[in-house]
Length: 389
Image 1: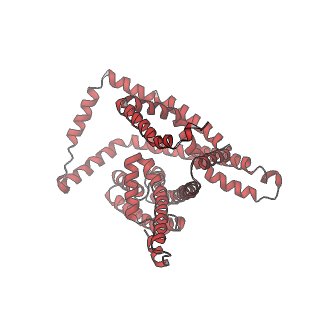
Image 2: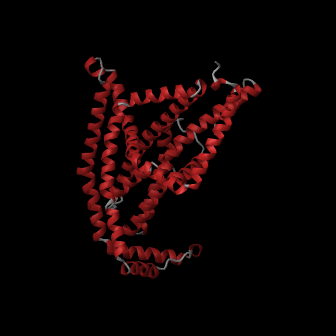
Image 3: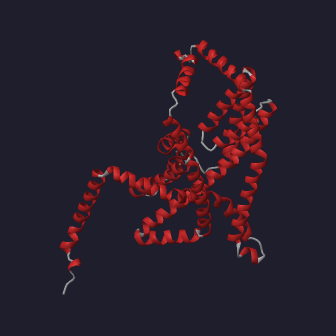
């Protein structure tokens, strides 16, 4: 008896069946959109710790892989055969040591700067008023800052502080235990991800080979590898460059006798993860703080010093560290950062460059493929022109 599921008539109806199922699913999503959104929110709240754990494991794996490669070159078989375990232990010890160093050296200094700022707040407030008067006198594009209106709004807000506001403030404090639990769960999950990363990669690759055609599977594997390389290279470059820039700025502001040299130096090193805009915004904040605390002359000197430092970093240090890994035009970088920031905030701005670099390589490969298919082998000059974007 012939199998009815192999008949041509039934196979011809399968696309219509899938279309009907897709229409039903779309209708259910549209008709119960609120329920659908709430379900996604609940699902995201469940997987959030594991998502953060994956990000943490990915970052920790960068130095961990380097240490494991170094251990693999050791001739002592007891260590080389257990390089994954020893590499993870050494990496965690380094991270804990850095955390303790920050806790005992940097945190007290930052705390001292905060206390100093609070104690000198009346002086800083008077300097801020002088700065506002200076801006108002310039009549820059008709901008006028009315301090009395701002203080009146603040006073009204304080006077009208209701019981509901107190409850909402307390509800914000209730988020802290949840955040601590999420952080702890993310840390534990990151350790398990690091231990079983090879198993995870093997399972994902097997599923990919089973569900996707061979050619597409190869392309996905290739560009996933490029994206992974871009992310690792970007994190390493921005971390090293942030440490260099933060150290230089800290020393410069210390020479300029800024009482907040350490806080401002750390801030500039951290915001350096955001390309282009990060160092500009950080430098502007540093100049304003120096203006309030040390006067206009020192702020002008600091602005010149920071501008020179940024030029040296942008034209010499960063290109030397990056090499040809991210050969993107400044316009494309700015567009990427803007779109990434609009979609995912600061996190989107940070990951925009590696993603766009991988997409650029993918688009270049597609263009070259169709050029060769249409025109035959293209010369090296045209291929070089395609790769210069």
